[in-house]
Structures are given as C-alpha cells and as structure tokens.
Amino acid sequence: MPLVDVIVTDIVQETPTVKTLYLSNADGTSMGAYSPGAHIDVVGPTSITRQYSLCSRPDGTETYAVAVKREDNSRGGSVALHELKVGDTLRISEPRNLLGIAVDATKHVLVAAGIGITPMLSMARHMHVNDIDFELHYFSRSEQEAAFLPLLRDRCPERLHAHVGVARDDQAALIGAALAGAATGTHLYVCGPDGFMIKVAELAGQHLPPESVHIENFHATEQPVAGSNTAFEVELDGETFHVPADRSIAQVLIDGGGDVDTSCQEGICGTCIMTVLAGDPEHRDSVLSTSERESGEVMAVCVSRTRGERLVLDYY
Ligand code: FES
Image (cartoon, rainbow, N blue to C red; front, top):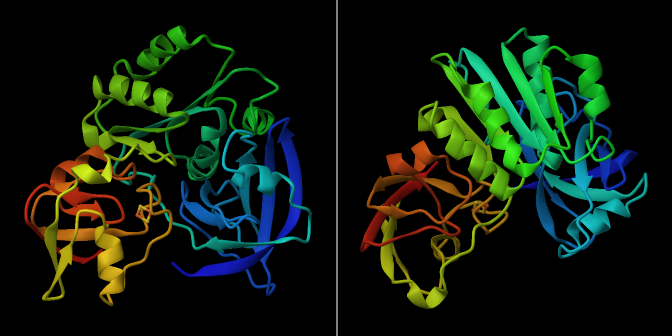
C-alpha cells in the first residue's frame, strides 16, 4: 500500500501514557474524510509499522488524529512516537476499515477497554451526529487513565456507560446486562486487550449471531512453527505458483510478479486480503471476522495457508 508523508502539527497529552498526534499532509492538501472505525498504518521514526485507529472527525478534512499509548515493553514503536515533536514527519497509509458500521443494524453496542476506545470515538461521533441508535460501554482502570472520557461525557452523556475501576470478574455481568434482551438487528463492536475482546465476543455470542459481532484486533496471533507447514500450489490469473513450507503465499506471489499489497505481514492489518475462488484456507490471521473465515471466500495471504494441495485466488 502506498505511503504518504505527513507532518505532526499538534500533540496533546491525553493521559500520563496516551498522546494524540495530529497529522497533516506535508504538501498542505486536505487529508479528506474517512469511514468511521478506520485505521492507518504509521511508520514511525524507528521504521516500525503499527496500526492506529483514526480518532479525528471522520467527516473532517484538515487533519487526522491518532492516539498512541506508550508501551515501554514493546519493540520501541510507541516510545519513538511519544518522543516526536511538532514539525516532525511520519509516513502513513491510506485509511482502511475493518470495523465498519453495519448499515443494516437496528442498534449498535460499542464496547471498549483502555486504548481500545480510539476506533469507537469516530464511530460514536458518526452515530451521534446522524442520530443512529447506539450505546458506548467504556472500561478503564481509573479516571486518570481513561483517555477522552471528559470529551465523551461532554458530547454524548446519554449514550455513554463509563465503567471505571470495575474489577475484571465484574465486567462480564455489565456486558451481559447490556446485551440481555438485545433486539434483533443489534450489532456489537469491541476493541481492547486480547483477553477482554475474547471475553466480550464469547458473551456477545450468547445473544447475537456471529456476523453481528465485530472485533478490532491489532495484535498478531502466535503462528505455528514453520516446520509444521506443508507446501502447496496457488493459482492466480491462470498462473500456478509453488508455495514451499517456509514461505508465505504473499512472498511467493510478489516474487512471481503478482500485484499483492502487504503491510504488517502479521495478519493484523487486512492489506493483503485476497478472494478465494477454490480451495480450503487455513486461517492464521487476526483480522477476518468469524463469518468471513467460515465463508472461506477471503484470506490474509501474508500468514494464512491451506491444509489442502491447491488454492485458486483472485485480487480482493
Ligand atoms: S499484510 Fe497485514 S494482514 Fe497481511
């Protein structure tokens, strides 16, 4: 995916560990609108690429905003972003949306924990402005760590359920209560730590069909050791490629001249998703929804494979 240069035009310290970076096009042109819930790839000063949800106004045009939580035990991506100054430059991708608002839903339940609030900001703003029925459940360990909580209390207090300092064991009851009696057509969206998202998705599954549960996951799942992989063949545009056990489909297709975009290479960003015309994908990504996986019609070719002998793919 092509990257563009942007300038950091403002920095706001939201909490002791979260900063919002405001980004503008280096050439002065408008950033444009984006669909609520979208994210961008950000290539930081250490050349590490990470995905961040956009939390500026989705209908705004001047700047994008991303909120970065400082993770001191990470590989340094967020620490380097926290050291940026106004006027520094970054490279970002175009927005992509893996948490799009279901247009046919009758009600939306947004559930966030910690920095997982970021994609919910643009979604809540869009729903609030357009008078779409929603409620937002925001779990935070403390008031001090709850980024954007004052903003949400100011803008949509009647939609907001702030669960501050709730013990982990008590979270399920609150989420269950929010979903009890959910009307047909209700959709749930969740973003937060892995364990939290898994728990919420399991609870949601007791009330809603799988296609109504949407997860924003920017963490890669652990991959099986390469030694357990098998070789197979992939057909694209009538040409057959051999995928050995130690290489990904994306690597093989790109080396073979295929026009396959990649970014994270970890199965979390969705850039490399391709259409499956034939064959049985073995999904190893963290980006597709349950219903997308079960359909067998799409796959993330940077990490996913097949247990069979052949896949026929097309561009997505
Ligand atoms: S390149 Fe990010 S999911 Fe494949």
